[in-house]
Every structure is written in structure tokens, then in C-alpha cells.
Length: 310
Image 1 (cartoon, rainbow, N blue to C red):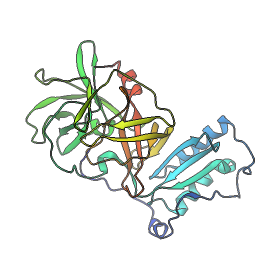
Image 2: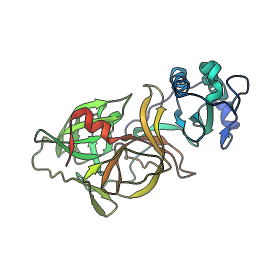
Image 3: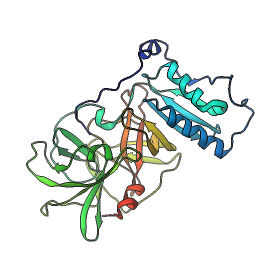
Image 4: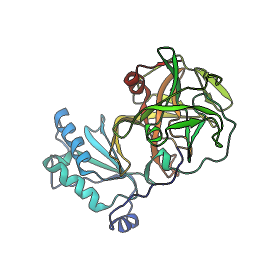
């Protein structure tokens, strides 16, 4: 979604940290935690994840790495060394279960990533623009409940927009937001109140349409496509990721991909084959190394509201 860019209040130490950015994995502190030869239990790793959440440092994302058996914390360019130290201290004796990774740019909900490249003709398929007052987002997937038509999109958009339109001039009304969950989750539901608007069970993939026949849970290594005017392909890098965009609280249960988010993509559909996969939550502002995006699994949204894809 595009709206007025939010300003994050950060530590004065950030400026110094930007000068000393390091590529790759940051070395963990040897002062706390076990040696690299030690194995951490699932209970311990969950405790460490809770510690990262408790530390409440904006610009961080974290997940348990199955290959390393540790909690990987991705930190953007605004996170200072002092804030990394704060996370380690919060983890206490389990700090050795932390692994840190610098990522370029800064993490933001997709609403804050910028302006759409240009106006497009209005459509109502997944991956195409929808509009609210001072806001542009993307439709995720069309769905139905008890004979009534709806669509799902990003919760950080439906939190802010109560009525949606097909055009940026706000003349062709679609319908109201009827459900929203953000933070914690990042999904929302809009009801179609305009019976003249078609709402196919397809998503836009460049100049093509892809029929969505069901949904699937993300798994590491799964290839998928990002619906939109420029259809992109990428791969699931991690699942069950938590992200702290800053200011509102963390979002949990996301999956990560090595792909850029384009302006106006909030809530955009991702799909694998003919199966719905997720809704765009956010990502990094830098695409110098292909970018990083985080996605809300769509099944959670469908289940929460009893929706069936159309």
C-alpha cells in the first residue's frame, strides 16, 4: 500500500552504526550461551525467539534456521550495534543461540516502500491495484463466504482504509473493509458491495491470467510467482518468520523470499502453480541484492474468516 510514509524514531547511535555496516553474518558474542558444538532444544529456541520479540528493536526479522539450529536475526541498516547488544542481553544465557545477518536498506511494511510507478487501468483480479483515500494497495485473492463475495489483502492496509475503489479518483466503489488483523498477523478482508464488478478466481501475471484452483502452505525451497503488472518469480527462503517493522508491534508466521517489493504491492498475491500462497506484508527498501520480502500465508486469512477461494 502507498500512503504517507511513517517516520520511525530510532536511537542516536544509528548514525554510527551505518558507517560500520558489515556484509554477511555478524559474529555472535562468545561471552554468553553455549559453544558452537552445543545443540539447542526447541524449547530453548522458542525462548530465544520470545527474547528477540521482548527486545522490541525495529528493523529486525527472525526465524529458526533449520540448518544452523539457531535463531537467525536479520537486521536492517538502521539497527545499531548497541541494539544488537540489547537483543543479546535480553536472550541472556541463551545468547549463543542467536545469529545475526545484516540486510540492505530498511525494513518496512509494504505501505511505506514508495509510490506506484504510474496509474494503471482498474482491474479486480489478484495482483492489481485497488484504492482508498490517500492509499494504493493490491488485491490478493477473490473469495466467497455464504454466497457473498470478498477479497483478501494486507492487514496493514485494511487497518487504515475503510472503503475501497477501482480507481484512484475514488469514483467506482468496490466495498468496505469488514475484517482486519495487524499487527500479529497481516491480512484483511473487503466485501464486494458493487454487484456490477466482476470478480474472477484468477490472478494477473504480467499480461497473462492464472486460474487459482486452491491454496498451499509455504515450505522452504518452494518456487513461486508474485502476481502483478510485472510478474516475478522467486523462492521461499524461510518460514515462520517474525518481523518488527517498528512502531506497531511484530508480525509473526510470515515467510521470506529473495525478491523486491514494488511500490503499491501491499497485499499482492503470491502463488505456486495454480495454488494461492501468500499476501505481501513488507520487505526492505533496497533492491541492490535482489531485495527481501515477507509474506503472510493466505491459508491463515482464509481460515480466520471462513473464506473459500473463487
